[in-house]
Image (cartoon, rainbow, N blue to C red; front, side, top):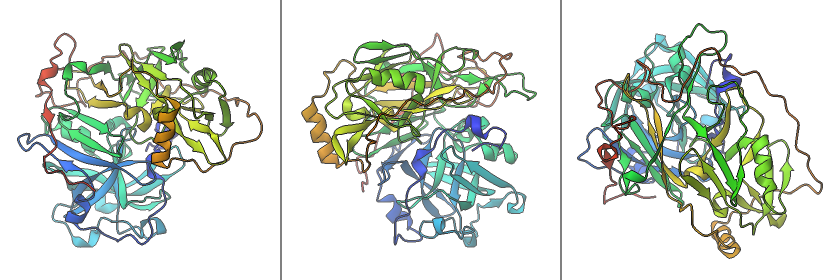
Length: 501
């Protein structure tokens, strides 16, 4: 996802794209067929906004939606921790590509445009050691009623990423600074940034709803009115800007990740002060990345170990992956606070499932990770995102800084779930984890903190409004300090004739 120099520091873990290829799947799905297996809908009165259905893959690793290009439709995994759009092409001959829909180069789409005669290469690497490589091109991309002309994207011809459910690629929703394609080709802004900067949306934001029944919605240019019924309850937080990288000529901070400051953690009412890895960063506060591309919740050992010390009978069971197990009848709650209200996870939110060899224990989130050199300590993936409707506001040049809005779907003061409720939940979900626990105590590992990769002499204050690279300056801001007008946020509602799988 980054150039080699920046790879180790900056990539967000994309857990949602590594799964077995489904056997005997068709090489290509028809447009009607592929649309009928996912929730779709839109408010037809909002011609600069749309609502796309999303669905959880069968391996429960990634949420995907539908994009159309070159008279073909593709399922793409959503990822807010990366910024590039890529799909498998017919130039790929490896086994990973053989049974999934591919972009048909031979069709000769009238809207296809080569870049440098298909010789501008991309190589996106993810922190789980997977990669996707190929060449860059341009194509008109359709997202329901939204049209993005001449969008730069990657045509993958080599990868060790395995995909199932006929998922053909990834749609990154991050900032351009995160993009490999944008750093390789001229005028190759990532897809959401492209829509925002060209003024193609009612407002430069997208909203994400991940329901507990494995479906949900992605709204572009508006928020889902069927989920957010009271816009005044949305809690807004500044996206954290980052200084230039060490060793570069940059003198101004800009946006890199959908990250916000994490202020407090509570375990069953006991306070844990998050300990940031780098005290020299501008905020001296732990940072949390909201990442739909991650199937779990991940935090630093210095915090995760203290969280599980608040659980009776908890134990570290996997030193490599930082995985803890707790008794399945645990009644603790885990609460995250970003400066205002509390967002509380109940046992069915943070428990992964009973262990096959010892059903007394359940694996649990968060898992612990070694320090990242970009200072992002927490990665709040799907288990956290199930508990909120999340809004990613891209900001407006010179007028409005990027913001993340969180609309609670869990009642933070609700009584804790009983063991019988948890047991019934896992029984219905058939959520047993096929693994064995070690029969010995696993010690907390030691680790080395890498050097901080940003230039600390350049300030990066929260709320920074940059002069370019955000939404078009023609937008009228409604979310800025002193003029928050939530009733002006555009909404879109699912069609009453939703197609479901």
